[in-house]
Amino acid sequence: MTDLTSADILVGYQNVHFTRANVNQPPPLSQFSRDKDIFSNFYFMGRLNWQATPLLRLTLQPYRTIQQTVTAGSLFYTATGVNLAATHELTDSTTLNLNLGFEQDKFQSSSSGGSNRTDLLKNVAVGVTYRAVKWVGLGAQYIFEDRNSDQTPFTYQASTVMLSAQTLF
Image (tube, rainbow, N blue to C red; front, side):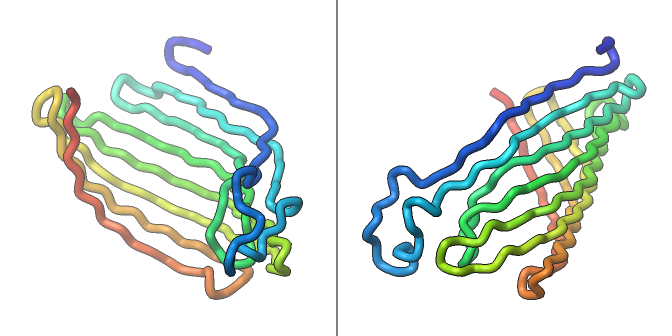
């Protein structure tokens, strides 16, 4: 790596299970059996930072991880994706942010007979932050998200506008 680039990489094996869950619970929790409430998979998370110019920083973040879900018929899903973020300083106090993301979610069916499912999630976020003084700032961001699933009820598009205030102390 150089003064312009840096990288972080985490690689491992992730094992998720409900070790403290009661076995005899009322529905819907009664559908989970202790020997089926475990899921393991390869884990990866990385980050490559590149200071393209003194004002522009690019970050590439690939990942693969297990997540828990509250969707009926599934306990866990494997999320595999990548994010590309760009941060450009417009002025000393104003920064423009862009994030592009792509993720594949593969759901593992539970022991109660749920079905496997695969979703593709694409998103783009554009925002601006303004730092009035070193310790106080404001931000605005627009996010568009498109989820395409092989099970139609889980397919959607969403638009979100966020306003934020930050303080450092």
